[in-house]
Length: 68
Image (cartoon, rainbow, N blue to C red; front, side, top):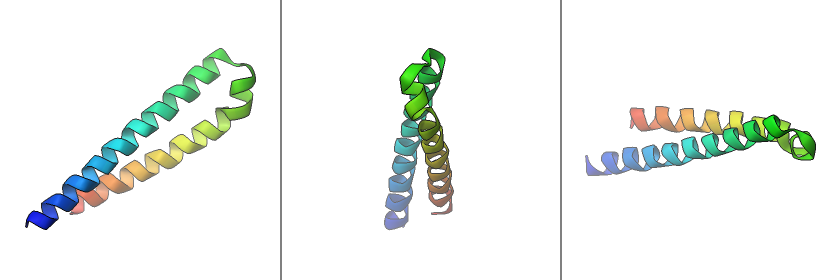
């Protein structure tokens, strides 16, 4: 019982970290797109791809936490 609770808490904490990382990447990409310039040309698409990957990771972690 205690072990299951610890697993759920650990997965939930990892999901929160992943969600905040997603938010940081999303805002960085959005601000870069708003400003335009070389930064957006170089990193805009890569940042949005990273955002999608982080969102998928967050969803997987949330599902695992809920199932634990």
